[in-house]
Length: 109
Length: 122
Image 1 (cartoon, each protein chain N blue to C red):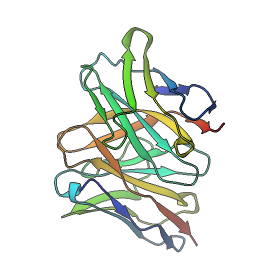
Image 2 (cartoon, chains in turn blue, orange):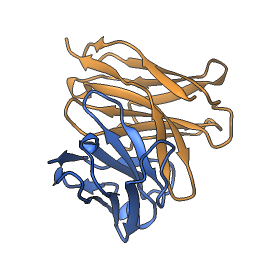
Image 3 (cartoon, one colour):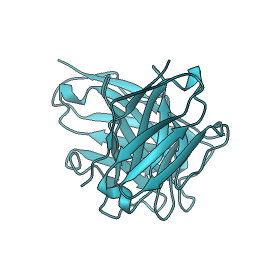
């Protein structure tokens, strides 16, 4: 399968921890990467690979993976973390084709 | 500093061919391991990967759209061009280009251009 599945919406209380998941067969072979997208803006990479954060991304963002599921965890969610989050991975074909998840809308209460 | 910028028509008619250009700076597509991808996002919908070109001029396309897409590069101009034939209103979307990097088991996009909205309408 070349599909990645995300929950459409997740909410978290300010300061609490939230996990956003991404499921798909390709994740058994490949790591996910994660992007944050705020309204009217281009996506921004927040996690890539096993658990790598680009420069400038707060350390409250972390990534993990188990079986066919990848997770993005925000520990101590802030109001500015409210956004859409997308995962991607290489697809199962083994070449450079890529697949995205359907996105998760995170609301910080 | 790596930057990318998309350019192209804001409006195309059904059945026409769309040509988009990604102009980038801060890296070279002749450097081993460097790639550029095109990704689109219909209004209110999810991201969809379209195509990738690498430093060695290898090209990869979305399985569902490969018959309509062509990606090419001009290394001397730091540009990547995407053409999409037979445009339809369902192709209305913001089109992004992004520098694409990869490891053995991961591919990621960083950074992205600001995107360009393309509307398909007669």
